[in-house]
Image (tube, rainbow, N blue to C red; front, side, top):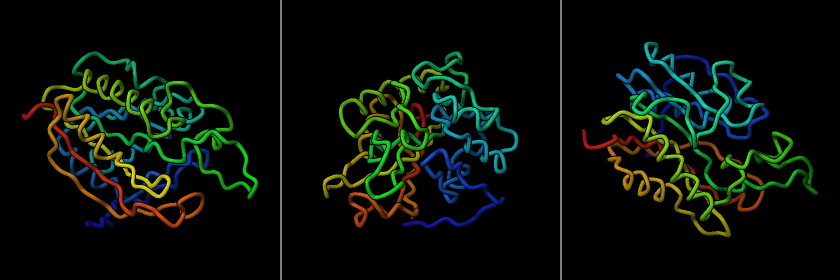
Length: 230
């Protein structure tokens, strides 16, 4: 299992309003997979940390879409919008680079805890219910899978043939059992015409409290796909 530690810049901490900590070591791995790409989209932009890729890809145009106004406003370059209906014409981008939600307990919609303020969920951090088209409130299941089929279909629409799709995803434990989220995304993207080219598994920190706190998947995947075998 590879461990990446090279970094060209000091990366800022994730905004405290957003519970998903975009891990520093993933960024140079993504940048390497995106070398030569000129127009890059993150359809799940969150707080806009995809713009950190510019340290490695200074000539690329990077766009991010985020559905929640509070998170979109953190970076003024982020477009407030919906990943299911992107505001660009077909084939505009030559790369997509994104980290969707994982369908884990961060999708819980509980706003308080009897053991203190320890909930690290999307709803808790934003302090309200999420937009209906935000997968941050979707547990791993049929609704989550249907949503991402639609999101990946829309991402494919705005991607050129031969374009790169870089996916950051992670499995999780629920009820003591491993949930094969990564495998599902790989199969789904391949079913939409993408070809898997590279798969890096990278050690990353995990939260150690809550249910299954002692059972964590120790790595995240960064996977490169190409739209069509170009």
